[in-house]
Image 1: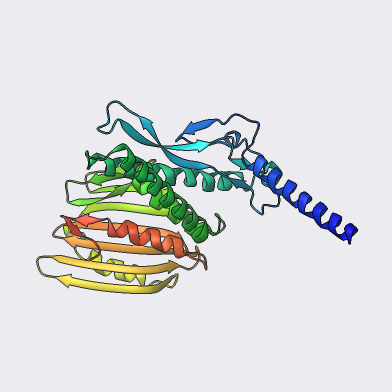
Image 2 (image 1 turned 180 degrees about the vertical axis):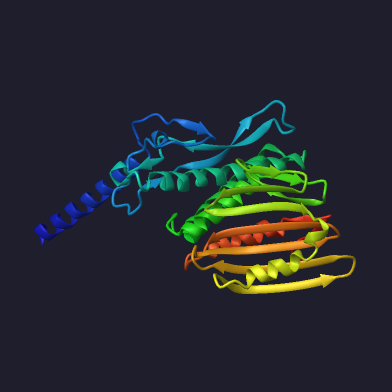
Length: 320
């Protein structure tokens, strides 16, 4: 009996030592913590010890903190931080093929923290009567929301493995942090991101860019008399053998207006197009998104819908 008791005590002590060791590793117990403001991360910013028994390649420790700011109404300002000492990467799992993608997934965890820090600052700016206790409560609430959003991000993207959903989250977060707006004098208004290309001459203006594995185009074209049958030309193009139509709606209105909305696939390229063409008098407005046509396209569909929903022509939404 005594031997069995000793064995049980030994097992218990061993288990406790393992648990304590893991906790010490998680907190890098003997190492001073290095904190980074929101920025573009590199793998060198992940200095923590890789988690024992973890099935993941990396993990980031990021949160929101309140810092003193004499220019703020509350004398505090919310900022997103990354704890470099608690962020870790198993370098043995990093390869030239997956390094960029994995780092980007962790970066967007940090970007989510920045989005929520900005929202917290916006919320604080609208209420100048908050006490210090109220500020702390708000901080706790937003960090809980950060935890929820991080879990949702990992679940929807399967920790970055579902590429189209990863791209959707990048688009969603970038829309808060980096998006610009283009307003053409012809009445077309919509979102742009960095590295866009502008093409124009006397007859047309196009803004286009390639991002999130997708193509985006906003453009207008002035029509000459020989182009007034452009809607028929578009329908003829859509009737070609290399095109598989998934949706087609054609609407002709009074006052020289027409609209065509088509979703189609270029068979040889396996590329899906969501195409809108609207003519008002002598101007044709073209809005197009393109993306890979595959079984993993749900995220791209979400991006396309969000992008097209943000377009207006003479202050009227492209999609009602």
